[in-house]
Amino acid sequence: MKNNKTRIFTYLPSPRIWKTLIAAEILKLNLEVRADTPRNLSQWLWDFDAKPLEVSTNQKQISVKGTKGFTNTLKKTKRFLMLNPYGTVPVAFNPKGTIGIFESNSILRLITRLGKNKINLYGKDSFTKSRVDSFLDVSLVFGALTQPFLLSLNSNKKLQKATITAAENAFVTYMNGIENSLKLNRTKFIISDNLSIADICFFCEYMQFTLSTSRKPLVSNKYWFNIEKKHKKNYVKSYKLLERLIKNKNFKKVTYKTLKKYKYYD
Ligand SMILES: N[C@@H](CCC(=O)N[C@@H](CS)C(=O)NCC(=O)O)C(=O)O
Image 1 (cartoon, rainbow, N blue to C red):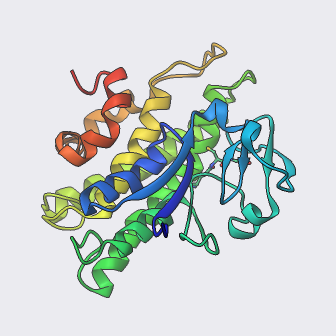
Image 2: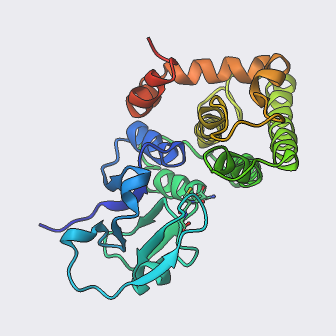
């Protein structure tokens, strides 16, 4: 049977790929998801035809030392790196395996484009779509600036004060913009009174940050504090939006198992 599904390779749970899974749920789009826990993923062949190493055939593989979130050696194929030159997960592939899409926001855009005839989550015209892109871009900047902090919370190396300060500044900058937009435009969602991928991206990027920062660092640290708790009072509208999104049935379907553990659901 011909496979016409978009394929995703990722670790789970991951708020980064939740972006895509939530959009796919809303758009009723079937995806092929190949995934494992972060720990197990280093025992996989990273390829379009990704699979656990023990069942992999004699595919030529390149051993690459993980740099972001993976400390051990990863087995990536040449095809994987041709399709996905930064070598990161999550990654999406067209059904034939000739095009790779990397960066979770770009995968989210892809899914929204594929499902555009069902519900328009992107926006009706070029200006609205580009405004959505603006929010997706600031989310990526926030994610990139806070990644060193999130990774160092789980590391055995000492967390530097400068890393905490950089993450705090990134959180405040990101949240200020979301809050200003909601307050000044008086819209129900970020772009308008309709849900868009800007909201999905905001929800997941926030979750990526808060799920990690709610835990104390592995190695106890005198500079550490809960960044979110310190600033929460300044973001009333943003937290209202997050509360509304968490109750949405499509968000709940994708995130329930993980968020229940963090007491977001009873
Ligand atoms: N901004 C990227 C971040 C992706 C990323 O950093 N992925 C890390 C895992 S957290 C990775 O694939 N690392 C692979 C490696 O270290 O080689 C996104 O949103 O997709």
